[in-house]
Image (cartoon, rainbow, N blue to C red; front, top):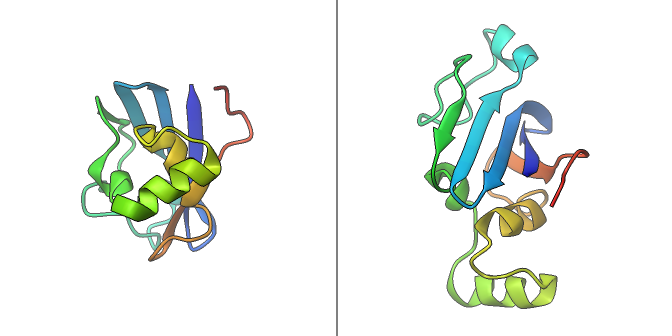
Length: 111
């Protein structure tokens, strides 16, 4: 299991978890949900207490990854399999992301 904190402008909005290559979940943080002025992180993730589940990395997060030659270069430099989308997300979406959302590895990460 691996997980990442999903941040909106540096504030914790939720947790993204990969249980295995075919089981992903996103869940909003309770504090984020309780604040009516905090927006959803995306139109595909309306604010809700429900746990969003998928058998692949959610498109919203997958689209935060680089493509083509840049992905190959990142994979080689970071020594992460190019097909390990979650690993690449955790390694690259914490600092160099476009927009308000970033993803940082959780402290309780188990690989």
